[in-house]
Length: 419
Ligand code: IMP
Image (cartoon, rainbow, N blue to C red; front, side):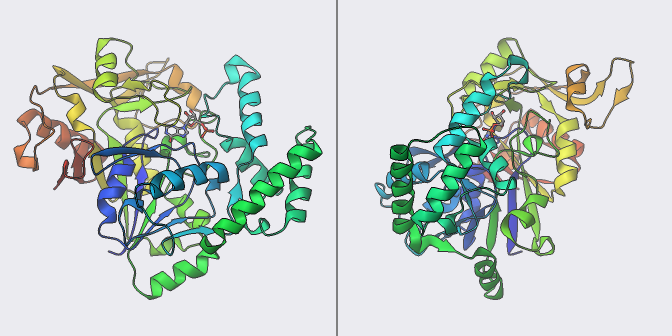
């Protein structure tokens, strides 16, 4: 199979970057299709930890091409910082990094708006990463965004930025406008070599039979339509989003790989039925180093919720699963999995509700499985795992009704079990 997608199926932070990094050795092109610098990708490369936000996770493989598609929103100044950090590690970009000319830009005003919107009312707070993502996507659908293809003209930049500022009720001083226009034009000049008309480039790759991997950011439960609205990000994180965000036929994707963490985490506000508020939650948070890689915020931790995970499997048409961070559960005596919810009228629910506020009023129903004590970080095969760890994996497989083909037991590439 030559065209695959790797998607986070929960609330983001499932460990997708490592899975993409591992699978990228066997592909030619990695394409990030949505999100912006709200994402935090953590990769261990030569035993050094790298956290980056925009650049696709395939960048550490010398020969692979990495692309940012039209559905991504780019903060040019963030991209500069990331590229510089990677170039310092001798990672090269020329000829292997491309950006669709249609990409919308995240401007400084979008960060101001993100901050302002979050401050308006405590009960309407989303807990965004404050990277300007929501306002940038909003301007994109309002048809006023600055696009990559605008960067060649200072006049166009000036007019658009002035318009956007007025649209949002801001005045931008002549001086600030001049500086921003100069900086953006400079970015455009320096990066011109990377700008492409992506649908044609992808068509070329397909005709040459290249292997393509689509990389998702965030997770399906944060999708702007199908996640826990309004506590979602502002893009289409699900498999269906690939086609519309990239300019590519959905018929051509051969395999969709879903990434599921072995327990649940959520950062920011929003419902979380299986959230743990006890010492087990703290233990998972500590063992899993569950602190946001973009904002540093502690991630909320909880048991695996098979109702939400199954919903995700369904809406994405997941073919195979990767189960990550299984090593984090070592040392927990009893591990729980939520298999259904009970609502206020004592009805048993097996469907993820459309109105996610209902999740605040349901009670999760759990099954309990025996845990394992052994450190599994160096186990190399499924058979090597403790019996109870195998039982846990098999139970999740049964509940999701898809095969688990990859298990991650640590952050390094070689801490990956293929089944
Ligand atoms: P935004 O994407 O910054 O607008 O934030 C919207 C919601 O999505 C907030 O709850 C964020 O914490 C969450 N979010 C955004 N990006 C990520 C991510 O990469 N991982 C986990 N949560 C995220």
